[in-house]
Amino acid sequence: MLSHSKTTHMVVACDYDPVGNGRQIELAVTGLIAVGHQVCVVLVSSGGGLATRLQAAGARVYVVNRRPGISLSVIPRVAEIIRNEQPQAVVGWSIETAKIISITRVLTRHSWRYIQHVSEPSLTVLETAIVARADEIIVTGESVVQATRGMESLQSISYVPPAAVAFDEMVGRDQVASQIGLNPNKKWTLCVAPLVSQSRIDRLIWGFDQMAVARNDVEHIVVGSGQLLRRLQRRAWIEEVDASIHWFEHLPVLPSLFRHVRLILQSGRVAYGGCLLEGLSHGIPAVVIDTPPSRDVLGDSDAGILVPTVPGSEFARRATELLENEELRTRCTSAGKQRAQEVFNKETFLSKLLKVLGS
Image 1 (cartoon, rainbow, N blue to C red):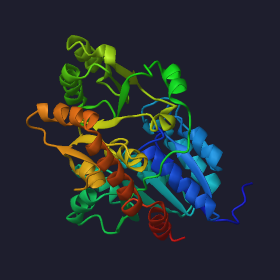
Image 2 (image 1 turned 60 degrees about the horizontal axis):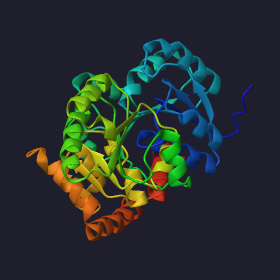
Image 3 (image 1 turned 90 degrees about the vertical axis):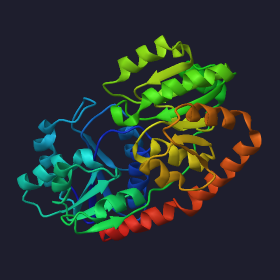
């Protein structure tokens, strides 16, 4: 029988990579444990390696789905875990989990607060109806705040800004290069995004093609999975830039990579800009298409460059400029670290999260 002498909080989430949503979950879990709470995490997909990091932090972790995609078939198992753990609050992390938790709530007799975390500004009518069943909604960016403000069905909304915290991993450049097949003598760029239409990775490939005209000493790392992978790889082959792109569905050494990446790129709409928060904390300049999620992270600061979608050549031009202009890079690095500390402070993130949880 589990001991419930401490407050127990449960997080239901996908198995993310250790950046973006995955990093925010890790910071939330370690923060809650540090102040004396018990935390269990139910992962409704697998493949990202989040379970290992959360277990190392002291959380109980249940992986209820051995596949990368979400399935409603996990609902009975999630309900069983809730009945056994008897949490005071269940946090559904990101909109993908909302349907699972709302149905699970009907199946469990134990009384628990349902808190839904939303990191994307675009909710469909169906998603809004499902999220409205939550007792509390956590939104993570100003664009999400604006998007939900006019939704009368969403009554209790709390703004909890995410945290930008640098990784402690100190693996050397040559070792990282050897592990994942990179050339240590070239400059590396990084993009983390699901390979779906809204991420617009096709823009990124076209940008790689344009950058290659000016630079042949750059390799590009793209981390993400999705139905567009094969199509994007074929496009890269057609445009003759496939040799410079390294594709990874998941990348366990990702935390070690940030100390060696020269530039972060983001070509579409992705929560937290994919890995923009981690880039800020490490002082890595970024070139991103101007979208609500990327503006939430970069704002109007000098931490990176927000690029319009038209003309398409602007993305590659500004990325090349950041690779070549050391003065501009230095300014972006300083501004990024300052914004990470002032706007995305870890202590502020945890204090607001604890307030929502009633802790």
